[in-house]
Length: 125
Image (tube, rainbow, N blue to C red):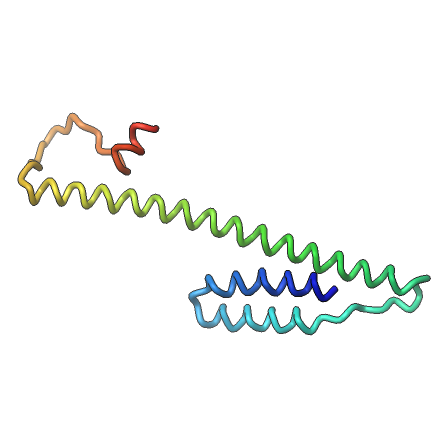
């Protein structure tokens, strides 16, 4: 049980490292402290203590899998958003560079479609 709790706390600490909001970080710290204080519930009507103990470990494992999956989805989403922002910044920089170098001119009827991203990314599709 202690190893499973330690894995869950590690996962929560990873989420804490990526938290920017002070209120959310305090809430997450409270969840970490609550997780560290979890003790197995004993079912006195069960035949064996081992059954309820193993079920408590299974619950903690499921929480661990849930937290890891949520963190993975959040990370994947943020990386995609950061990639789009980077591509847009590159497009703006390219336009600004063209303007500064004097190669940019205003064309009322554009014949060229501007694409976001580097030329290598555009060639790959």
